[in-house]
Amino acid sequence: MEQKTYALGQRYIGAGQSEGTIILNEVPGNALGAYLDGANIIVNCSAQDATGDTMNAGEITIHGSTGDAAGYAMRGGAIYVQGDAGYRAGIHMKEYKEKVPVLVIGGRTGSFLGEYQAGGIIIVLGIGSEDRQPVGNFCGTGMHGGRIYLRTAHLPKDLPEQVVAHKATEEDMQIAAPLVQNYAEKFGADAESLLRDEYYVLRPNTQNPYKQLYVTN
Image (cartoon, rainbow, N blue to C red; front, side, top):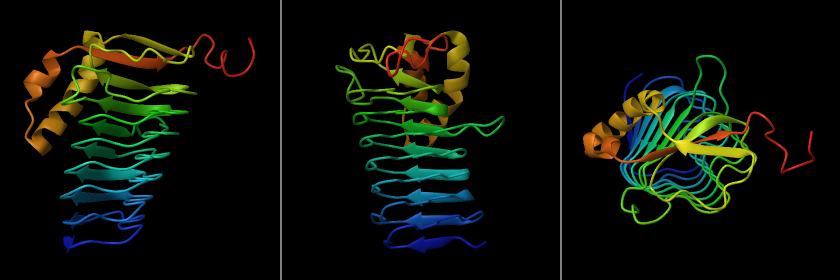
């Protein structure tokens, strides 16, 4: 499919598209790339809410920031955001076998990052916010799968008890490093510098993930 370029657009641009490339030079409407199934979308500015809603495959690259619920229920493919993301980024992300969705955010995120996350990888680099936590409140609430990487020395103090946080190991970084390098290549960042810094990994407490939400089991 030939490449398409739009000056700006409305909601659902690229919805369900399985091939080709779409380039947007002004802010698209909500649900950009919803149900995306293999196409490539490049946004040369910021995006609005629900970017990549339930996307299955493909890639979305945003040379700016994005609104709330980026990657909502995504089950494959990758979203790279140069700047910040709003509330509830990565909510309900899920994975199955080789289908592992990826959400990489260069700046900060709002509250409820990874809410009810069931799978996939979220990386928040916190570029420009190294002196404070790179996420809002209630990070990982209801998380029961996947992992969240935070490039920070300031771990959130209000993590729910069903989430376990630890400093990233060499094995952890073998997974994250190629994704950080992809981010750096797309946006002209220094991958070596980003990877030298401290990372924390958040995972669900597999012994009793819902203890604090419901009752002791």
